[in-house]
Image 1 (cartoon, one colour):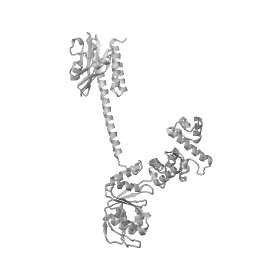
Image 2: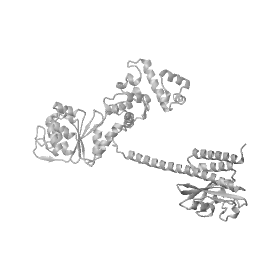
Image 3: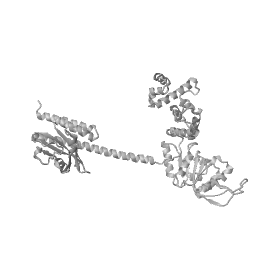
Image 4: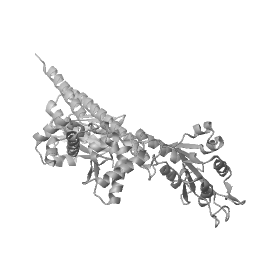
Length: 510
């Protein structure tokens, strides 16, 4: 048979367990203090139980939550440090037990719950690392001295539990603030990270290109841009120029492969009057026109060995003579060259000067082909879709799922230029506001991309078209069959049958 003392110990253990569980349930202390106070009153029979918090900025101690007090009584419970029992506990950091409140003048009874004979008051500090942050107190009636000591010990334990929970939450809040500050710093860093406004692409491969542009843009160094045809080498050259100190100077483009060999020298360096048949007047060349700015020599691998010698001099000395003239002209220019050829192989074959190669190869930038930056394909397609929709005057808004799948599976030998031409054609032939696979050029209509035979019959072609329409509806409905069926003006049963027959997985659109 359990003795009263045993029963009390069991109650204390149950109380401590319940308090621990409540403190673990919620990170917001204001939401857990009231349940703790109510539990304290329920298990131990305390008529009143309060928690006060000390505000160091105002110097005021106020009841934060209470068990057994009205809202008006709770608002009245305010003290200064050293004032009343509560104020002294905050001031000294030591607990106080008042066996009879009628005999202690320090018990102020600010809440108005009454100075009744036989009522005891126990107040213990809530301290975090020797700093008192508040108090925990209870009223009880006609309790013997031994019971008051037991209650004091119990309240000190609960006060320590509350303090530990507050400490953990403070640490969590500080960690959260640090993480938020770090996240904001990273967001700002990413936001401020250099990205040319004239180039579309967020892939890792393009980020490398952006970083290289940022490093070299403000220097006077010669840049050699390497990459396949249609990758956007001229856009990189423009980005370098318009983010350099020469931004207010001219940007002169020379397509070396497009100029006949007999006139390219005159185009680059200019000519004097009478220098050759047809030279009826003095003419400035591209290098003179680029003075104070940038000259972009596209397809540099196409120039002749004779012209390579003159170009080397310009790169080294920044001077030249016009065709048919002997006056040396000095220019302040920056040279950016580009090629889709393997210049090192050309050096080994003897078709490109080694000294010119190394003079150009000071800061090479490799622009990756579109097949190596797959994550940019849809981004680029959307960009071209918006551009050509406005240009052509059509309300074409988006790409269907089947179109996206086809674009992603194609090898893009012509790179970004081929993709641009493909989207321009699709906008031209589109009837509505969505680009479907059949709007794309025949070169993209492959077995791998459409999922149909290369020589398809009418049924396979209809199935392909039907699959695209259903996939597009499911995409808009986030994979839900019922809304998709309503959008297609059919029943859920019919659409479900079509989905099974065509092998479509709605989950991929969720």
